[in-house]
Image 1 (cartoon, rainbow, N blue to C red):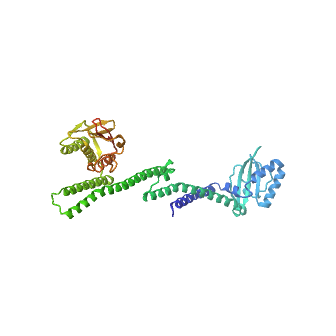
Image 2: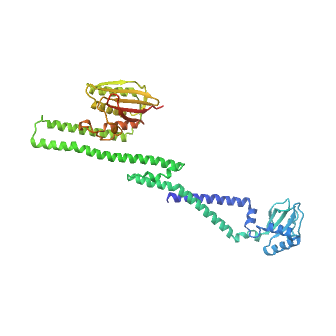
Image 3: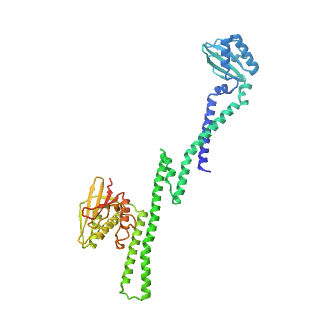
Length: 439
């Protein structure tokens, strides 16, 4: 059974049970009221008797009582507020009806019937009415239940309509979420389908907003993955083609081992190896589920500088400032990001050029900047740095595949930070890592 009908049935049955229980309790506690309301003649008996007595006199009221006795077997007596009989009445001549002061008595079962004691207030006076209903007429309303059946039918219809609307209100958002989930599974998430749900101010609205954020994030990752696969296919095609041509030449011409072609093929293999390593690094960043661990930021930066100094014997590398911070995150990823930024600066720095690394703390953020004296990047390209396989105008194939900055940007994003690029006062490029300081 669908959730919609389950919720509808539960709400409807629960409401009926509560209403039915309340009806039974009301009947048990107010049986006199129910009998007087549902009996076709008892409902207005007191009002008609008092009205006849006040407008037409005692004689007319007595005749009206006799007519009720003949037609409906109802017997009654009208008293003043002090208990003085105002009419001869039509009560049976039995001691049980005369021994107790009617003003002080309560309704009770007597002589194969029920004696009601009613107080009635008219516009000019207050009366007391003793009304006897024989057993044969006591439940006459049960033999004519149309009014009660209509009321029950209307109540059930109203409860059914309320339950239907409530069920639709609860299950309609779930159905929309299911449609959105199917679209996401097919790789075409449409955020507009959940826009109306996101405006709700309840738990379903919160779920919709969270699902929308998740869907947009997953869709972005899927689009990025598709684009990355297209870029990888394009980047792999060129070195593989050169390798294929080189191998064909080497096999047909029987070249010696010292021939430059083999060095060229070795270089192409090295490029492929670096490309595959960068691709694997990107893949690990997307799927890395290792827990964050504490690390000392200054030591991590100093270790990265020591590694780059070993490779950069002709460049000047300096470190300015200290942070004194202990962060929580993934030190290997952050070290890889810093290593890629330093390698990028080293690649474009001139001989004897300066590479400056600065550590500083600004409020709740820690800044790590890497500057070089290379040719720099035009302002129109600064915002695009970090995109996979991006090649700037005039950049040669020997300058890499453009994945280093992508790896660095994703590693910084894993720590809740940002990687920005700008012109350096040294004349080249300035890469600035901004990391939030926990606590």
